[in-house]
Image (cartoon, rainbow over the protein chains, first blue to last red):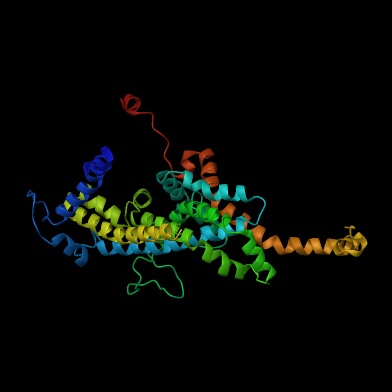
Length: 311
Length: 82
C-alpha cells in the first residue's frame, strides 16, 4: 500500500517545506550570517560582534540612535498594546448595550479599512502646526491653548511623573512619539473591538443574568465575568498587536521618517541597510527584531496548543 | 388550570400606576442610560474626526491646506520661461 511507504508524508510536505525554506529560512539564516560580517566586507563568512556592539554602545546617536529606536519600540510595544486592547474592550462592551451598535462599530472600524500610508497622511494634516490646517491645534487654540509641533516636539509631556529637561529620564516618552502611537491606536482599536466583541457575544447570557439576579452590579459583572471569560481572546488580540508594534515601520516612516528621535528598529534597519549603505548593521538590527518577536510567537503558539488540548 | 386573575398580579398593579409615576420612571431610566449613550456617541464622533477633517480639507483650496498649486508640467513651464 502506498500510504505505508516512509517517503510519502515527506512528499506531501515537500512543497510547504520548500517554500518555507526559500522564503523564510534562507533569508533568516542569510541575515544572521550578514550581521556577523564587518562593515563593507566582501567575504561570505566572517565573525565580528562590531554590529551588535554598535547597537549596545550607541556611538553615533546623531546618525543612528540605536538606543532611542529600541526604547521607542519598547514604548510602542507597551503603550500601543495596552491602550488599544483597553479601548477595544471598553468600546465592545459599551456598544453591545445600545441599539445603534452596528453604526458605532462601523465608525470605529473605518480606520482599519484605510491603508497605513493614507492614515499617516490624514494624521499629518491633523497634527499640522498651523491651526488653519491642523485640526488638533485648531481645537487646542479654541480652548485657549498654544499650538504644538506634534510631530517635531521631542519634549516630555507634562505629567506628575515626568518633567521636561535635559536630565529627564524617559527618553522615548516624548510628545511626538505619543502622537505617533495614538495614530496606531486609532487604526487598530477597530480590530481589537471587532474580535473582542465576537468573544463577548460568546459569553452565555445565562451567566450574566444569574450574576444580576445574585445582585452583582455592572462593574462587578465586567470585572468578574466578562474579563475572565474574554481572557483567551484578549491574549490573541494582545499578541497580534505586540507583533504589529514590533514591526511598526510604515506609519513612522511616512509621518516623520524617523526624524526627531521617533526612529523604531524597523525604520533604523531600513535606513542603515538601504540608505546608508551599511547592510551589516541593518542585518544586526533585523536580528534584534527577530529575537524580540520569537519569544512572543513561541508563547502564543504554546498557548494555542494548550487551548486545543484542553478543548 | 384556571388563569390567574390579572387584577391580582403585579402586572396589573404596574398598569394601574399613575401616569406621573410612569413618566418619572421613564425619565429615571433615560437619565440612567444617558452617560452610556454619551460615551458611545462621543467615542464614535472622536474616531470619525480625522476622516471628516480630511473630507473638509478635500474641498478647500490647496493653498489653504499647506499644499502648493500643481504646476503646469515641465514642458509648459519651460515654454513660459522662454
